[in-house]
Length: 214
Image (cartoon, rainbow, N blue to C red; front, side, top):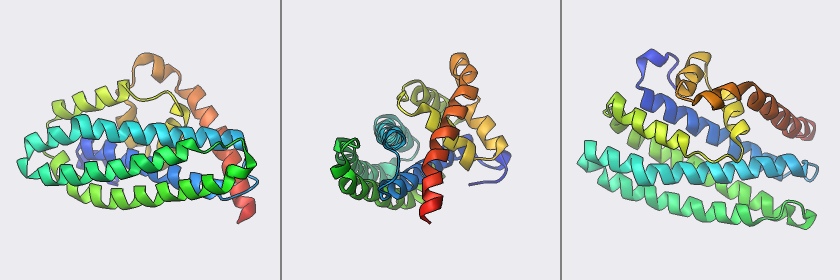
């Protein structure tokens, strides 16, 4: 991710930041799900966030962003089809992850398997998506990106909103975080301290066990 927000388009800046959130979230979920002592409540928070956030992200790209990129660059059509097909595969894996009953101890191996599958698929997908899409994202106008970003933010799921903010804080520089969160509606901006505190608590609980296990 670029170190200086002024040297990169806001479209790439925001997308890279969200992708890094997805990488960290899916990796933490896979690691935590593999530990028998991982707390159920926090596991459920993280699982629900991963499922909701990735589904929303894929839907936003398929319905709005990829058609916008294709309008800017008609040759993007082939990439559009490939990425949407990968989204379909990922969404099937998310369905399997979402179906696991975390409260049942007998389901922990199934949770670990499903979480690991999602993590691997996300890593593979992003390794394909980023080099294929960033050059086109740089060609979007500021107004085009702002319209997409605002719509995606307004339709974002409530599940795990605190983890979205907490992980953005972890993966971004202060300048990047300020740029990405600048468009938050006033009520959401006012809730940031509470969301950040809640995220720190959940992530610390999960990582405390991870540190002991390692």
